Length: 250
Image 1 (cartoon, rainbow, N blue to C red):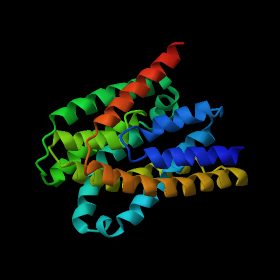
Image 2 (image 1 turned 60 degrees about the vertical axis):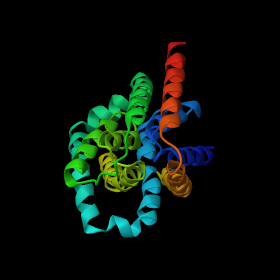
Image 3 (image 1 turned 30 degrees about the vertical axis):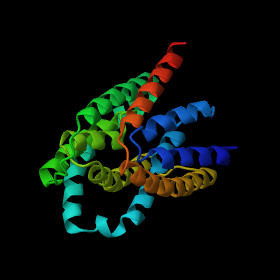
């Protein structure tokens, strides 16, 4: 049954990682709904399978990600999250990840903020300079709180800087590569790679499924933003945040 659960969670990760709805929140609630006991392995699994999603981005944007100008921007944007994530690692994994209330409120508040910024957004197709890349990185650093969403934080940051939707979405995709790889490897190093052979198989299944679903989600999302805005995602976050709060108060 664990293999089937790994497939579900891998698909959930691949589908939500690059959408501004918080993949972490969906995975945490997914684990709960599947009746899995919270453990160090499942916490590591939730982080590790993101490598499958980021591999999809790496291949999808293979040429663009190696351009020197993009490397500079991604490095600058990655720094805030790297510093904050390193300093607050213990709190993030052992406090934030265990608080369903924080996750629910982060989803709800993030949805409201996204709706406000989207309503006022005036795309002027401004270039993502190094300074703006750093500011986007500061926004992304807020996503150390589960429920905020790394994708949503970078997108809101881009909207606030009047960057076009397609440009900020693609930059968010690219920024996922150093951010998720670093987080996954740091987490696995912290666990000492102390997994059983069966747990390694579960990790591999989740990663492969995540890669396939993420590839399809990236293509679909890029087509979506050519015609529509982010308001439906804002409403979704608000709705699911309210549902989670209601469940917690029952």
